[in-house]
Amino acid sequence: MTALVVDLEDPTPPYEQIRRAVIAQIDRGTIGTGDRLPSIRTLARDLGLAPGTVARAYKELEAEGVIETRRGGGTRVAAGPAAPAEIPPQLQEILDGAVRAAREAGFGDDAIRRAARRSLDGTAPPPGGTAPPP
Image (cartoon, rainbow, N blue to C red; front, side):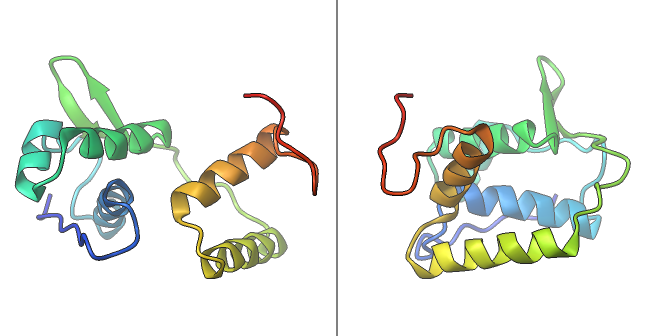
């Protein structure tokens, strides 16, 4: 794994920068299936961040199936799905537009992701309404 860099001036949260950097390295082939990632403490120390920030990035990556952590085996790049599912172009255009509009309105990726999950889960409030209890 090549060195990761986190830009604290970037409005993107540091954990998201780490998440994206790991995925970019996998996409470029810099790291591959089974390769071990630095421990949370090591990466946090190297980046000058709190361990919780790196832990959140790793947790997000694990939830996405990008990495897997095994006790005594460390954190490694997961095999992942054989091939990504095809996304209909019309759906991608709709979502790209919604994300672009949300970013232009000043919302960060984390807030956009939470809102999308609420919509998918059916827990989003109706337009002009209030949210259901958590």
